[in-house]
Amino acid sequence: MWNPSLSPEPLAETFAGLGLKCPVVMGIINVTPDSFSDGGEAYVHDKAIRRGQDMVADGAAILDIGGESTRPGADPVSIDEEILRVVPGVEALRDCGAVITVDTRHPEVMVAAIEAGAGVINDVTALTHDPRSLTTALELDVPVILMHMQGDPENMQIAPRYDDAPVDVRDYLATRVAACVDAGMDRRQIAVDPGIGFGKTLAHNLQILNRIDILSDVAGPVVLGVSRKSFIGKVCGEDDPRKRVAGSLAAAVLARKHGVQIFRVHDVSETVQALGVADAIEQQSS
Image (cartoon, rainbow, N blue to C red; front, side, top):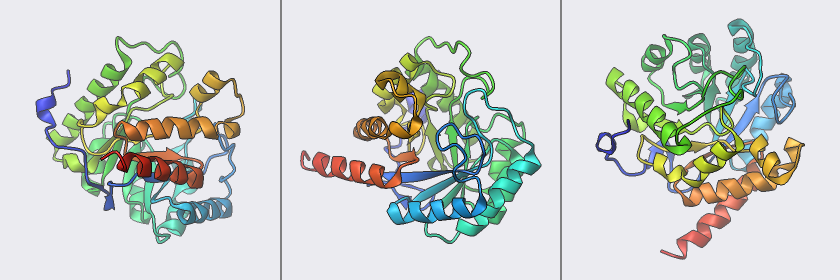
C-alpha cells in the first residue's frame, strides 16, 4: 500500500536535464512495422530521422524511440531485431537537440541504446519484464520512466480488473519506485506513467485520467501517453487513430491542469500549441 510519507518531495522541477515549469512534449518514433497508430510510417530509417528532426523543430524536447510494438495483441520481436531497429535511429538523432529515450523492456536493448546516445530508459513494464532490468538501469546510471501495465501486450486487454483503478495504479507505481530507490536509484531520476490503454478498459482509463493528480508525489514527474489511443475512439466513435488528435489534445490539456508534466505524443506541434495556450490561461489565475 502506498505511504505518502515515503515521498514527501514536491512536484519535480527537472528530469533528464529538462526544466519542468512548462509542459514537456515527448515525440513518439516507432521504428516498427505494426504500430497501432502510425502504421509503421517511421519504420524506414530515413523516415524515422526526418520525423525526429521535424518533431524537434515543432517543439519536442524528448524523442522516444521504440523498436517493439506494445499495442494490444502484439507479438514480441527478437532482441537482435529490436536493437537493429533502435540503435541507428538513436545514433542519427542523438545530437538533434532533444533528449533521446529508448522505449524497451529488454536489458540488452537498454545497454545498446544508451551506448549509442540515448539518455533515458522508458520501460512499459516498470523494469519487471527481465530480472536484470533494474540492475542494468542502475549500472547505466540514467533516468528511468516506469509505466504501469496489467499483463503483457499479448494478453493485457483480456478482461483487466481493478478494485479501484487510480489507486491500484498508484500503489503499483509507488512499489516499483520504492524498489528502485532501495536498490540505490535517485527518486528524482524516476518518472511514472499510468499506462493508459495498457491492461485497462475504457472506464479504467477515464477513471485514472480523472484522478491522475494522485500520482504527483509518487516520484519525479508524471508522464502521460494518451495520443490517438483507442479509448478516445470509443468515446467519440472514431476508428481511425489519425482522426483522434482533438480528443488527444483535450485529454492532455485536462491532465496538465492536474499536474502532468511530460506528454508522450504523435502530434507534436498541435500538442505544444494546445498546452502552451492552456498554461498561459492558467497563469492568469495566479
